[in-house]
Length: 466
Image 1 (tube, rainbow, N blue to C red):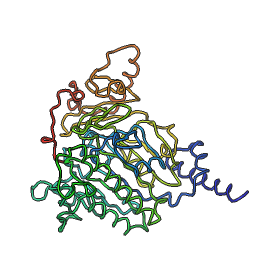
Image 2: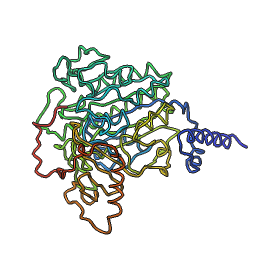
Image 3: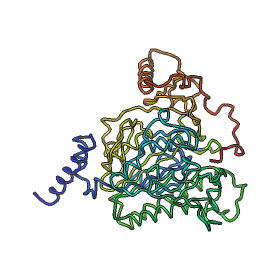
Image 4: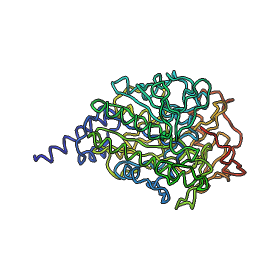
């Protein structure tokens, strides 16, 4: 047996062990593994998780945009895996709580801007097996509690969105109000918030390059207000005549540039083959932004709504030598899936009661055990949850409204009952009933939903600042 054959058999054996540990023994995956390079430190890879703020999938070149230039994210997708149908919650806090805890909002959500800090998080699970953990960017989970990030499992932080002493959270972009490990940072006049938070995250990575780490970059970009970046022609003085779309585009592209900086840092430290990078967005784009999109002409942001444009986000994973370049996952996934995936990849303990599935097999090209449908429960105030289940193109709400989404993107024309769709409608109803079993039915919103963008009067002046 020659050296190449021996290496291939060794690689296959290693992945077979990893697959067995993750519950996905598949001959297809093993065959794929035989041609992959050796995987360094597969039991405890570093994890770099990037979360964009208010950025739907239509803002990424790898999802079809020709308007936004995102070469770094496109490269990660081309050399890794792209999930075609990934679904967030429609707004920031609901998504962040769901990501950290791996549970649907109706189980543990409190209110907008807050999180129940008694909940188990993926940061806590990773920390329990020796990972160093850090979060930088936007917090929005314990407004007046500087211990919140520590309680949630992070060893350190550099964050925006603390309402200290009852005061508003302050500027996030130019001359930002940021907190570093519980203390307000000084000397930031004229500096750019996303630059500072990324710098602190990179400092953390460099300081912990010789041990497994979780670096969670909850980017401030590209959330409203739409402002110049340091790369904009009007950085020195905001030119409001340039409009929202021009600045939003530059903010998206600046975030992509930051992703490139993160990847280069990992390359320079020789950590890329030891690191799983995951990128996604916390919800759809803000509604005042309408983006050109070839397959649909244009897409108006759907943030805050349960239509596809409010929660269909980009989702990319990259791990050289482990994930085959050009992998595309077609099955539908949701944010509850992130926690179980990080546990499976790292070997961290997985708490009981998580709602999600392990995405790692999908990253390796095996979707045979995919759940195949998604569920959402949403109310930003945490009082009365509107719910839906979706499988493929079909989507059923707790109100009974039923849609074929790709033929009705704004969900303005509910499908009538028909022999052709009765089976899928009944299946989706059964899945929803099963998910909500034991939950107080009086807390489920069954009223007809606010459809599409009909009669919507939201303007720049009344967009929530956070």
